[in-house]
Every structure is written in structure tokens, then in C-alpha cells.
Image (spheres, each protein chain N blue to C red):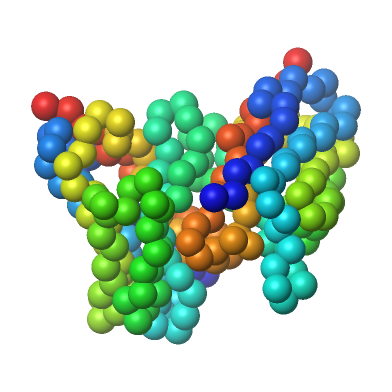
Length: 115
Length: 114
């Protein structure tokens, strides 16, 4: 069974960089699929942030592209998200998922942007 | 960019009664390979989204057969034949046809019991 687990700080100060990691078990990232990040502000809908292939090929939501970096570490079977210059509008539950199919999701982690 | 529009945004339903959610895309979701990459997700309160339906009408493993998906081109529908208490939550449609550059979700439809 494929499982994904997000980890990272739950509180980030405005203007700083949000960093999260998604550890994948039950499937080797190197075997294929795109892997990605989706976020959900409190009480709102889902927003795709970006995705990465094991080769390092990435696609980002145009609305966030200038601030987003997604990287992959196949040796650790995990991928990571960095979102720079955060504001209160970036407060959300951040999910990692096996994208293309969106068939496996992590439990999500709440990140609050506040001083 | 492809815009996904769901209606209604709120759907109060009586237990045992049917429910129907519409999802419309701003562009056709038929891909060059002939498939239509339209998914439906369920998000129960406090949980991660769960895929229910993929490629318009294919139910995921473990999804009750009271859930069904239909549609083509730009118009799609998720139907629940008889709503049960465990069906309460928010339902999202999502297109994967116009990727890259991006996947796009609908705004979500909140299903609640009257």
C-alpha cells in the first residue's frame, strides 16, 4: 500500500520560506508517476501547487511559480516543497500526493504563517 | 487556463434520497488519446481528499456503487443514488486533460443532511 507522510514546521514567519517534505513508502518514486503538492486554505477549496517526476522534471502552478521550488531525493524516496516570501494568504493545509492519478494522498499538515 | 465550475456549491439532502452534482469545464476534456481525464474526489470533514471516480465514470476500489459518474466533453455529473450519513462532506471535480501545465479543481460542493 502506497503511503505518503508530510513533515515540516507548522509555523512560519511572514516573508520567510516554507519548507515541507513528503516521505513515500510502499512505492519507489523512481518507478514512475509525478508526485506533487496541493494546498487548502482553511474553509476553502483545493489548489494544485506543483509536481515533480523522479528525473527532476517539474511543473508549477503559474500563480505560484515565482515562489515555488519542488525537489526530489530518490535515495530517500521523498520529495520536498519550498515556498518563499510567504504571507498570511499561504496559511493552509498542505497535502502531498501521487499526482497524474491523485490516487494516494498524505494526511496533510497545517502550516500557519504568522509572526 | 481551464476553469472548472461546480453547481450547486451547497447541497442539503434527505437521507435515502438521490443527489446530483454538476461540473462544467471551460474547454473540452477529451485528450488526444481519446480519454477524458475528469476525476471526482470526496473530502469528509477533517480528512484528506479521496478519489471516488476517475476518467469520468470509473469507480475506485472500495467506492460504493451508489456513486456514479457520467458526462462528456465539457459537462459532467456525479450522482449519489441514495445518500447515506457517511456521504457528508465536500465533493470536488478535477481535470487532468490539460496537463501540463496544470491540474484544476472545481470549487467544491458541500453535501449535508437536511
